[in-house]
Length: 215
Length: 304
Image (cartoon, rainbow over all chains, first blue to last red; front, side):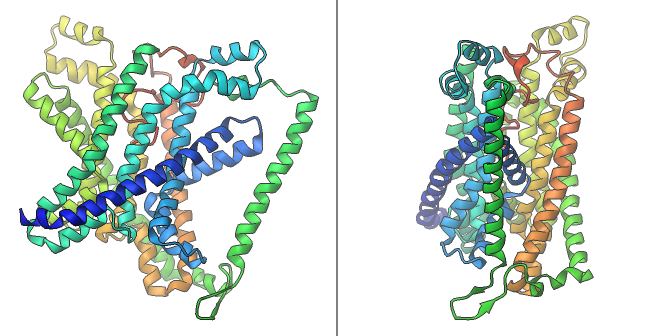
C-alpha cells in the first residue's frame, strides 16, 4: 500500500503529461488527418497520389519506429526540440493517417444519391462536399474518430520509452523503485489509463447507437 | 461514394486546368523531396565546431557491404516474424474463447468476461508487456507473445461478438428449431457465419499485431527495432541514419506485403459479406470500404 501512496505524486505528474500529449497530438492529428482526407477525395491527381502515399507509408511503419526517428534521428539532423515536442510530432504524424481513413470512410458511408442529388441541382465540388456530404458524414465519423483517440491514448505510452515521463514512464520508474509491489504499482497505472479510455469508449458507443437509429 | 460523383468528368477547359494543377503539384512535391534530400546530404557543423559528413556520404554507407550487418538484420526480421506468428495463433485462440464467453447464456460468465475485455482493451499494450515481463518473469520473448496474444485476443473477441450479435435472429431460432442444443447452435450455426463476416477485421488486426511486435523493444527482445538500436550502440552514431533507413525499408516491405495479402483475402471473402445481414442503406454506393462500419473495432485504426 505504501508503494501506491508514494508513487501517487509521480503518477499524477505522468497522468497530466499523458493528457498533454493526448491533447496536443490529438488536435494536430485531427487537423493533418482532415487535410489528408480532403486531398484524397480532391479532383487533383497529384494531391490524391501524395495523400495515398502518405497514408500507406505511415500506416505501415510501427509507431515505435516513428518515435525512434523523432527521438534519435531528428536531433542528429539538427532539430533541437526537447523530447516532449519530438514525441508530439511523432504521435501526430503517426495518428493522422488513421484520422484521415476514419474521415474518408465516413464520407464513403454517405449514400451516393445524396451527392448525385447535390450535383444535379448544380452545386459544384466544394458546395457538394461542404453543404451536403460533410454534415452527414460528421455523424458517422465521430465514433470511429473517438476510437482513433482511444488508440492514441494508449499509444502515448510509447513516448515513455523515449524519455518522456508520462504515465508509462512514471510506472516504469515506480516499478523499479518498488520492486516488492510491482503488481500493485502497474495495476495502478493501468487503472489511470482506463480512466481515460473507458469513458471515451462509452461515449463512442452511445453516439454509435444514436446514429444507427437515425440512419 | 466514388470520388467521381463529386465532380463532373472534366471538359477541355478543366482538363487544361487539371494539367496545370498536376504540373504545379508535381513540381511542389519534387521540390519538397529535393529540399529534404539536399538537407540530408549537406555536411553539418556540430556545436563544438566539428564538421560531420552529410547523410549520403560514403563514410556513412560503407557498412552496407558488411555481411555481419545483414546477418544482424536477418536475425531481427526472423525474431520479429517468430514473435508475430506465435502471437497471432494464440490471439486467434484467445479471441475465439473470449467471444464464446462474452456471449454465454449465463450472466456469471458473460459479465465478468465483459469487464475483463474492457480492461484488456483499455490499457496500453506496452504496459501489459512490462507487467508480464516483471511479474511473471517469463523472459522477453514470452512476455511479448503473451501480451500481444491477450491484447489482440481481446480485440478479436470483441469483433467476433459483434459479428454474432449482427446475425439475423432467424439463424439461431432455426438452429434451435431443428433440435440442436444452444451450444451446438452457437458452434455450428452462429460462429462460422460471424467468423467469416469478421474475417477482414481479424486479418487487419493481424497486420496491427505484426507492427506491434516492435513494442517488445521495451523488454529488450532483439526484434527489428531493437536490432537498429543495438547496431547503433555497436557501430556508433555516425551510422544511425543508415541503419534507420535500412530498418525502415525492411519494415515497409514486410508490412506492405502482409497488408496486401490481407486486402486480397478480405476481397476474396468479400462477396459473401452482407449476404446474411442486410446491407446498411447506402452501402451499395461505397467503393472504398470493404469493412463493416459498425461492430466495435475495425479498420478505422482503433486497434493501432
